[in-house]
Length: 241
Image (cartoon, rainbow, N blue to C red):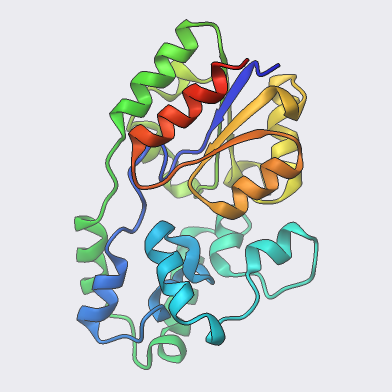
């Protein structure tokens, strides 16, 4: 029986991260997918936009680092993954991106232009999701939050909505040294909630993260472009609990 809902933050509670990065690439004259790959080590990181890019340049891409890491295979781990595990700080990450930019982009990254893009593309909050989470809490459903995140971003995202009020357990990748879709971070989240994975429904916008949760026996909702459709899918699962 499902007793618990576990939510992702970025792209689920918040609106999608880095939306419009493809347009920024084009405006700067970068090859499609090159900036996304520089920043994240994978093009599909940025939701639907990234998946579309991946399908267009699939022959040029290496194996998916998320999948390889989840399967425990040795890979050249992207700096973004190290950042999300808390193994490097944001300043070290940024220095690495600046050094690698000419290789990926063909020229140095214009930090002022990138800073303007980041300011204009800052995510908002899906308040319909937050309100539904509050209703689920009031109905007696247990709630957890499992996010791949960055330590230096913690104060900002935690101030964007009432995290502590809504969730009894919050697992932030940068504080526990592991990240989705690694099996261990799901097991840690369930251990902290005191549940078996089969008791949980997991909501995330990343297909790799969803697949990893399903392997553990969780019910899942793959959050797409329409928050209302995702909430309806969640309600349908919970109606059977």
